[in-house]
Structure formats: structure tokens, C-alpha cells
Amino acid sequence: MNSSGPAYPLASLYVGDLHPDVTEAMLYQKFSPAGPIMSIRVCRDIITRRSLGYAYINFQQPADAECALDTMNYDVIKGRPIRIMWSQRDPGLRKSGVGNIFIKNMDESIDNKALYDTFSAFGNILSCKVVCDDKGSKGYGFVHFETQEAANRAIETMNGMLLNDRKVFVGHFKSRKEREVEFGTKAMKFTNVYIKNFGEDYSDEKLKEVFAAFGRTLSVRVMKDERGRSRGFGFVNYANHEDAQKAVDEMNGKEINGKIIYVGRAQKRLERQGELKRKFDQIKQDRIQRYQGVNLYVKNLDDSIDDERLRKEFAPYGTITSAKVMTDGSQSKGFGFVCFSSPEEATKAVTEMNGRIVATKPLYVALAQRREERKAILTNKYMQRLATLRTMTSPIIDSYQQGGYYMTVPQVVPAPMTEPPVHIKGQEPLTASMLAAAPLMDQKQLLGERLYPLIHALHPNLAGKITGMLLEIDNSELLHMLESPESLHSKVDEAIAVLQAHQAKECSPKK
Image (cartoon, rainbow, N blue to C red; front, side):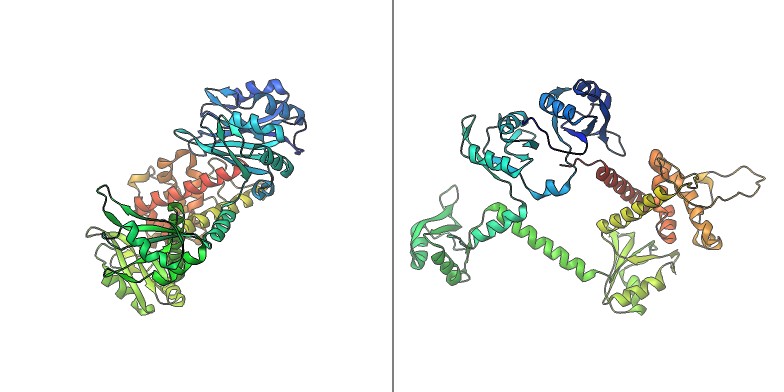
């Protein structure tokens, strides 16, 4: 590596590929000989507190950080070679692709250290990685240089060279979009044609006889099974693209031996899979758009309510395109969906039907949301609350203070009791009428008092945070969660996912 490290405002290193048992103390013992250290942080999972496999080390002096990078990279700690890089905090540089190169066809014996040692001669390396799976190296990797000039020198020198007796390809890294555009351009000039559904009677010669009429062919092959019989499909490779295109235009959909054949551009499996995925994603997106604002989620349904009764209850509010109660076999799961023909009708139904008692239970009615949308909303509320707390000089701390989460709710002074209080399981259920009778400012407090012990039984260390997050939800939904353990567990899981995502963002490796 060159003698002068990148000019970062902090002498900060990223240390990756750590064994799960590596602690800050171990890292301090390892790195302190290089120079005075300001801080060390092993990033951990918010729930399990297990190491995420990477850490950040801040030295007082950049020269000491560079010394550690030069002399300790890929040293072994607890049986694993550690990977040290400059902690690159600039997302623009990381995402721009400037200085990033791609190496493939590498011998499986080349590991991160060997790759680093080979390419460090060309300039300062920000990151270096051999891509591996459970079996070892997958034969390719990436090196990100500080400058484009260093990357160009590496490509000019190393492309086509032998590394451990294998000729490697070294080129500029290309993003997925760039590769797709490039591949699309090549696809427009195809010469290989795929033909299927011509039956078992066709041989290579017979297929060539039909398709040679469109131009000079380089190869013609009918695919055969283990017995040597035609599998009904094959390939024709033309000398030029124009002839291949003509064959596709004129033969696709034609009848041969009483069968309609398919003729099209031959595609690699990965390309076919990518195309199918794009089509599936588009269909999914179209379906989401079609039901946006018109599909209602209805739960807390009485067991006696079926599809017909559900449709009947919501029919006064507009034209219903579908009404479905979700079931487990013949047993209702207590929720369903009602889809209207317009957003206006759906909005009116939500306003009128949410909280209305049908059969024996008050309904919870809301616009249907995908799980991703619910998590996004929960995340947004959580982040807003964090921002509010950070600006508060003296937050009111109540019983929901757990792990740094503060609920700003009024204190409720209990009335004098002549009998001992009744705890959780022996309490009278909190009903919609009981909640409605309480002042608005006390309703969340009542719900929180019931929710907290239930959540505490699931996640003691996070009960305060989760309770506070869930109290952002509509009161009728919270009542249903008190009645339905399944619903409560689902919402708690979503809250946990939000907390984990937030923790991962706060402690993400900037690579």
C-alpha cells in the first residue's frame, strides 16, 4: 500500500469478518500497539446483542490508523483473518463506482489477503473482497481503489495475467443497471435462435433444411433425451443477426407437423429468470396499484360471519367487487377483505363501519396495507418520536421508560383501594364501552397499562419501547390486540423488525 493514506477527517478503520466472540477488549489489545485509540465499537444485534461481525476503531492519529491497516490486515483473531479498511463514510464515493474493479476466473486458493497483496501495489485500497460461499471462493471478487487512476493501472497491468496458473479477467466494475443496458444492446443483435414444439420427428438435418432458407447457418442442433430421441426443441445459430431476425419474424407461430412452433431469440437461463422476475414484479405492481385505496381490511369478525354476510354489511356504501372472509379450512380466522370499485366508497365504508358492532363484536376496518407499508409507517412514527425526544430538555418519564424510550403521557393518580389490586389475568377485560367512557387523554394510558405486561412477558428488555410504539396505533386496533394473542404477537414482531432495521441503519458498515 502507498505510504500516504486517504485524507479522512477521522482516523477511523472498519474491521470486518470478525468471529462472533470477538469483543472490544480483544480489539483494543490487538490494535493499541499501533497507537492511542479514541474508541472501539463492535456492532451488535439490538435484540440478541450478538456481534454482527464488524467493528469501528477510531485512532487519535491518522498515521497510527494507517500503520494498523498496513501491518495487521488479515491477521487472525480467534481463528479468523480480519479484514481492515478505511471507514469510508462518504456514500457518494462508495456508490459512484469510481476506482472500483472486478476480478473473475480466480483460482480458489486466492483469498482476501492474497488479493489485497496483489493489487495494493497499484494504489490505496479502500476495500477488497473475494466473494465466497459455504464451500469457499466463488472465483471472483472486487477491489475498490481510492482513485480511478489506480484502478486503471491495475486493469492495464493485470487483465489477462496469470494468477496461480489461471488467466484472470480484470475490468471496471459495472452496476446492475449498466450490465442490463449493455446486455440489452447485445440482445438486440442476436444470432442464436431457439425453436420449440416441433415434435419428436425432427433431426438436425431436417431442422436445418427448414431454417437454412433464411440465411447461412453456423450450427443447427436438436436437443435429445438419453435414448437419442428429439425433445422437441433446438437451436439454430446464424452467421449474422439479420438472418436470425428474419427467421424469428417469419417462423414464430407457424404450423409444422400439425403443431404451432415457437421461434425466438435464444436466452441464457439467468436472463430468462431475470425477465420472468421483471414480469412478475410488474404484475405485482399493477395489482398493488389496482387495489390502492379501494381494498379494506376488516377484522375482529364474529365466527358466524361468512362471505355473503360480510358483503351484505358493507353493500350500502358502494359497489363491492369482492368480499372474502379468510378461513382455516371451514373455520373463520376472524378477518377478511372487502374491495370497492372506488376510493371514495372505500373511505366512506371505513368511516361508517370502523367500530360498529356486527353480530357480537366491534369491527376494526381500515385500508388494507402490505406488510412493507405497515413497517414503513411504524418506522416513520418511531423515528419521529426519537427526533422529538432528542429535542426535549426534560422529558416526562413514566413506567414505559425501558432502554431509552420515553412515553410522554400524563400521570394518573389511582383512587384509594379498600381491596388489594387485581393483577393481569384476574382483571376485567377492557371493553370498547369502558374505553369510550374514559377521558380522551387517559385512553392511551389505560391501553398501555394492559398492553405493557403482555409485551413484557414476550420481550422484557424492550417492553417499554414496543409499548410506546404500539400506542401510536388506533385504539380499536389496540383493543383487538388485547383480545387476540395472534394479533398482538404479529404487531410486536413488526415493532421488533422496525427496531432491528433502525439499529442496523445506525450501525451499518459503510462499504
